[in-house]
Amino acid sequence: MNASGCKLYFGRWLIEGSPYVILIDVGYTAWSLDSWKAELWEHCSIGVPWFDREANDAVLFGFLTAWFLGEYAAQSEEPPHVVAHFHEWLAGLGVVLTRQRQIPVATIFTTHATLLGRYLCAGNVDFYNNLAEFNLDKEAGDRQIYHRYCIERAAAHCAHVFTTVSKITAIEAEHLLKRKPDIVTPNGLNVKKFSAVHEFQNLHAMNKNRIQEFVRGHFYGHLDFNLDKCLFLFIAGRYEFSNKGADLFLEALARLNYLLRVNNSDVTVIAFFIMPARTNNFNVETLKGQAVRKQLWDTAQTVKERFGKKLYESLLVGQLPDVAKMLDKEDFTIMKRAIFATQRQSQPPICTHNMLEDSSDPILNCVRRIGLFNSSSDRVKIIFHPEFLSSTSPLLPMDYEDFVRGCHLGVFPSYYEPWGYTPAECTVMGIPSVSTNLSGFGCFMEEHIADPSAYGIYILDRRFRGVDESCNQLTSFLFQFCKQSRRQRIIQRNRTERLSDLLDWRYLGRYYVSARHMALAKAFPDTFIYETHEPTSTSGFRYPRPSSVPPSPPCPVTPHPTTARQRTTTKTSATRRLGSREGSPEHPAALQLLKK
Image (tube, rainbow, N blue to C red; front, top):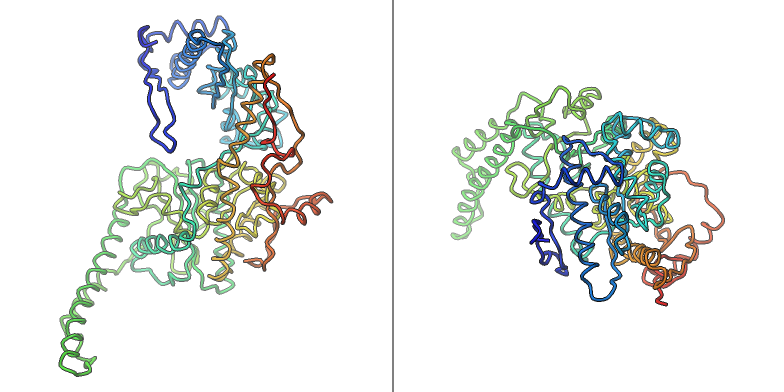
């Protein structure tokens, strides 16, 4: 292919395991774009407009991938049994062209979120109650993504095996792409990367101290709350205000602020919004806060050294120090100057950066509406950091992983979340989180855990409740969390971290193995047989309710009809361990691939 004008690179991926990887330079073959578009229209009746650069790259990648697979199959000495797994619509044309050219390859197409689903939810429609009612062609055309939608739908129908990452996305795909997924392949994590074994509690304390240092600077002059009784909540991800549930989170924070004030609570909640937006620089007031904090620290160190020297000299001569003489007039002058430097006439800023579209920003407009301006009377404070975290930042020098470990609770009340890596990452790091029954992660945890809230997985009902009811439920979750003692939070973090194995690729990888076995059996029926076993309603391991006292006061959970089978399963599952499920006919891992 390189001799024919393409540019392919072969090597090893610098990750754990060092797998082989082939990189395709799509820009190097851009000269073929027009002819390949014509071929795509002729054979598949899919037209791609010239101005859609992303779709143009998808055309180039699809044709190059199909070309590569065809060359590999043609030049193999023996007929190979190849499985090609394509993810998302950008790679989908490779599936379509592989089938159209009848290349002997087993194909799998996985959608992590349907393209049309993302656009519809971003438009604030009642998505899940109207899945069967949408005019799909019209909706895609109105949003100028009809060609993309055609590519995604064609890939879903052409693949031997079609998969999605969660059951909620499977329902969505069945209605929008008109094909029911063959198998659900949940997203896993390399738990070993996050594993801290017995150290994760110490890492929480260490990183919490780093966040507290930032808070001391950000709220200088208004630090009238006890940092030891301060809880750090956060939401992070793409800036999709409604899809990610930032709107619901802000409304719940306003209601939580009212509850904490009327109950005279001594707990202060600081909510971080880590969502990238358009900015032009750091906020001067925020940078000044960190400078003032550092200056105060240097002043304290100077006075401490002078005090320590006098104490040392007094003890050397065998005398107890005269406390009245330990600090002289110069020391008091230094300290008074430092105190005057902390005087502040304005409120601590909400946003850490200068926003380019301040007047139209959804988060800032919502903050103005609910009136949470970080005033002294508020028990809930808000910090909007419109940039991804980095250890090189002069403002909050922490990587995302360290920041998560230092927080107390991750809040992700998403309306549209096909899987949800952010709550999954919280779980493997031992940090409790709030998710919803409209996210893949939330549905997965409800299916595998008898009482998710006891393990620090709070699942908000956004599917069967209205917005106001869901907001009240989220407020209840947050208020109950604020009432926990430090010991209860430690117990809960231990339980949360215990769920790590459930999200490990060693466990979830079996679903991908099953999908590939299924694809081989469909593509090469004369060579392979795929034996299917009917999985149970709760495929895989089901964590029992903890036998110890709940770590927090009882709070409402998502209502679910409890069947007799679920009641008996909860009793018997306490004796099962994760590893014992391997090979069970109830689990997809037991689906076997047999050679004839």
